Length: 119
Image (cartoon, rainbow, N blue to C red; front, side, top):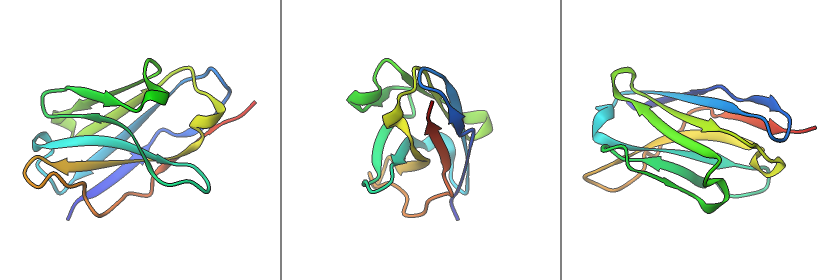
């Protein structure tokens, strides 16, 4: 059974930085596209960044140039480096995995990690 454990969130001032981590288990990690989602209060969950099996990355426009996704296949872990944080980045952040074969994201989610940007 797939499991995601996110960590690294916290309270940070605008302009600050955080590095999120997500450890995945129950999958052959290197065979999956990994992604970071976020969900702000009252809003739908949003896909923020992805990294494929060849380390090609994609980002939603609102985080381009500020966030960097990376992965360590040896540790079954995906990271999200977040710089120049803004109030609107406040959300619970989740990771997930997408099968290359089915093209679908996993139906199960971890507990997420809260990121709060506040002065």
